Length: 322
Image (cartoon, rainbow, N blue to C red; front, side, top):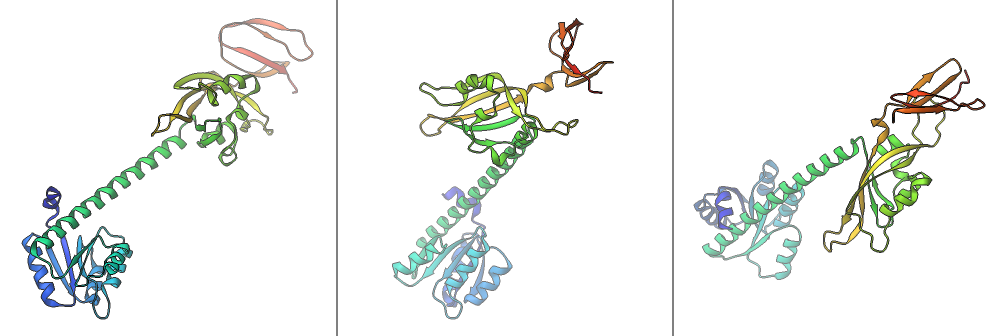
């Protein structure tokens, strides 16, 4: 604590009392410790000084005529500044001291006091001040980290989600609405399996829901999700199957290490393929995605199959309505 005090001993201090002899005595002792001291005789002068500037420590007499120390304490607490208030009073009332501490004061010094008692009280006040400032700095860093985390998650091109042990959605980023056409507020509490295409649900269930011996440290697999996202070239919004690569990992309780759910990332695989590509021919129009080289069979409705070699694309064509 002494090392902390040495860094803060030149802090600003306000001494408030209605008796000038106590004010002068306290001012001289504090100045011996290198503090920058201002004095206020009575509550009215103290309020004027508090409104004008912030102080590191305030030694405040509780019982004063007119504006009391309670009024000054309330103003200091309302300002929400990093100020440590030490109540200085001649009363032996435990109730009064407890009430002052409950209202925001950090310490209590009873009159008459010795120089050693004042010195200990000052060191404790500056130590508390240092803790408050370090706490505020850490809180600010945490808030900034959370803001950055939310920005990265919500602006990620991938689906990012968290599920409970039963596979219900606890969190989903904004890409669920963009890629799957599903508003975020409709997803919370919903089973993730309802987003999975029927043929892939059994595989997804093994990784996304809790069962005896369930343990998903980290696993990557592919499946199709159902999308209601609107196509730019279509006036209708049909349900489509979109391939995704999912990477999931167990979310462990920080206290007991037990699995409490999973979190995961789903990457749209259509971005890795050439498509959708629009094809046009005298009798056919359609779309396709680049997959593997080889022979492709095209069977338009009502027509016989036609096959030919394509080196880069596998196409499925539908009879043109044009």
